[in-house]
Length: 308
Ligand SMILES: Nc1ncnc2c1ncn2[C@@H]1O[C@H](COP(=O)(O)OP(=O)(O)O)[C@@H](O)[C@H]1O
Ligand SMILES: [Mg+2]
Image 1 (cartoon, rainbow, N blue to C red):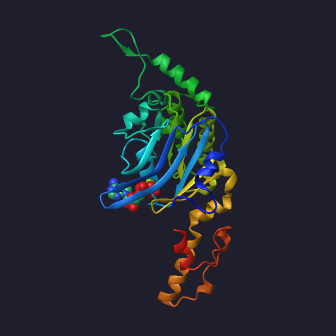
Image 2: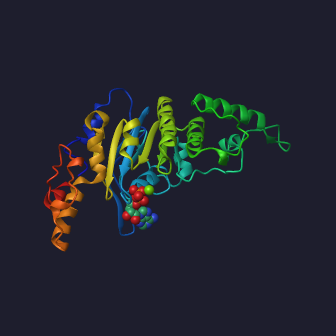
């Protein structure tokens, strides 16, 4: 089951107006690593000019999901479609050729190289005929400068080593780079996880800028607040399955937070603690802060099991 009482899965997606078809789509997709089933029955649709947030606790399957979409791993069940065509990508290059760019948490930058150089890393501009072909430094600098400004990123000096930029600024250079090199889908794996509040704000701003440039953004995070600031659609993974998939109009920040916090699991844990250790359950913090219309705070392990 991939649907959820709060969010008629497919319906939420179809609510989105208009002419556009998803660029990337997963239909009942899953992935097993040998005997370990990391992902199962996942539906996801990524539209242009939208931010699709994928939320979930550690081990929920977020990285596995984006590894499939970015061509690093192959799905072992269901379908993966790009522009409506079923595909089986064999490496990240193929994904990139189809316009799917991934910005990993540990950014593939060379800290001591200048910003402009990192912007073109691996795709340098050259001038002159072979064998006197050389780097076209002036054009790379000018282009990097123009592209960064286009995204609203103002840096004092593109000659400074990228390692001297803040984490948020480095992420934004990576986003601008992906946009410049023609990405249609931008995958960001926990870009705000290691950042403070202010730096996270910087990254969220450029996620919105990429969306405004028409990209479909897949924003992986375990922070519902960050997700809710920029998200158009929210997919929550738990233990490898999608337990919530809802358009912004159909889910509140409170509900999202509750799904992330695992309100039902907390209730089940309390129940177990009481049995095992004779803990007075009444003394434990209540889950009602996390209450949603679909899960009552008083739920027992029975209702918790019913949900998963
Ligand atoms: N290469 C792998 N081999 C075996 N198991 C894996 C591999 N990668 C991930 N897993 C398992 O798949 C599950 C989901 O992991 P992952 O996708 O990394 O979750 P997340 O990114 O949400 O933390 C975990 O139980 C993890 O141990
Ligand atoms: Mg991960």
